[in-house]
Amino acid sequence: MTNIIVDGLKDVKVLVTGGAGFIGSNLCEYLLDHGAIVHCLDNFATGHKKNISSLLDHPNFTLFIGDIRNFEDCKRAVTSVDYVLHQAALGSVPRSIKDPKTTNDVNIGGFLNMITAARDEKVKRFIYAASSSTYGDSESLPKQEDIIGAPLSPYAITKYVNELYADIFHKTYGIDTIGLRYFNVFGRKQDPNGAYAAVIPKFIKQLIDHQSPVVNGDGSFSRDFTYLDNVIEMNVKSMLASNEEALNTVYNVAYGEQTTLNQLIDILKDLLSHYDDEIKNIQTIHGPERVGDIPHSLASIEKAKTLLGYSPNFDLKNGLEASVAWYWKNLK
Image (cartoon, rainbow, N blue to C red):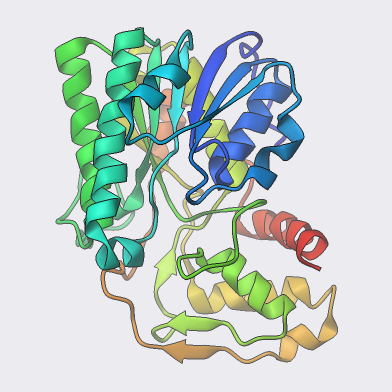
């Protein structure tokens, strides 16, 4: 569990949408551990009940099984809460290219339902998962919040539209919002299975199973991989920020370091070989580049440091060490 120390969560009422998902379930756990009262809304389309099984009997935890595409479900879940941490979405650029309509329905229609319900309930603040995909074809590095390009996928469009809606809802209705542009988040409970699994859990599982990891392209594409606990820190600090200047804007959520896919695999092989020496000899397979992929991604986190006091504790190596240990225990 994260070592972030944050006061001010006791008896605060929080709705986590997508609360059975990878990030959402960890947020629920952290909030409960620090005295918050947590509502969790999930339809288990991509989340898993096993992620929250240990929370179901907690006296401060309430599970609402429902879909953000259903406005009545949103209204039920948000009743009496102080803050919304909106994590529910259909992720994955390839999934959005294959099925743009469902991605749009969930990520835009569901977002609009949820922020409208939050407005009606007069919540104190609406914090939502934005995405680094919003930077699109902008080639400037590091990525700064006020410089974006044209979207490269339906998924990127939906996440940018979320930011536009949040801005309009603040200006029109006065609801305070903060958008968090996540950069390639990884960590415990992230699903390694399925066609749209993120690269780190997928690579870890493949290597544990003595399978060759498959890299799209030559492996030179780079990402700002961001450990889960840094993301939890940003969500909590966004909830509790008292500086007006820090509100109604968007932030990069990252560590601020660039790593190529080839470098990532080398680190994973080194870490996993401590558990199984044969893993260091597994070869990588290179396939075609994916449509809609951004070649390089590196975040500036100066805005988050300045306005929210963000100070990420986990760099890539520390985060991967913790993740590998978790997966080795839970996948074996």
